[in-house]
Image (cartoon, rainbow, N blue to C red):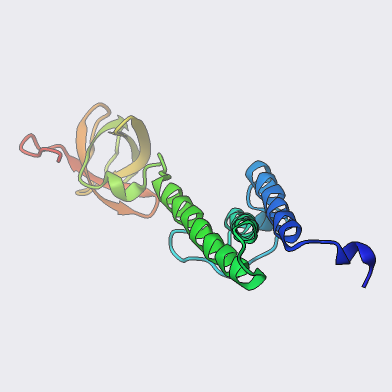
Length: 187
């Protein structure tokens, strides 16, 4: 065995492991998920929420914590095996916390886009007259977003521009609407 390897202490090994994990953590914080950047699939996704279990940030935290807790164990006078087990436990706990936090943040993401199905049951205004049996156009506001869609009258009658209508259903890329009934109130 080369002499420089014989002089390496367990503390130095754990500190190098922690440093390598920390460098990868810094890279993944700047670049994003390292695995995705290089097209590498870990093959372990957590499912419907889209957050990967083996995210590079989680693995980096695990490696950093393993090295850090292992070094702490060596400094406390534990054996190499006990220090490794302490590092393993610390890595699993901290990696798990980062994974849970990442999953929490991922679930907090929202989309401001309105789906066509959200228009059903709402009132809208005809902005391009709907001729009998033909398409026109309606405008509907959902929250702060205004959506304009092609529309057809349910009973194939004419509905003039400016009239208020109720969206009854979605038919492909267009909406089926009925003239607004004053007894109808939106939720």
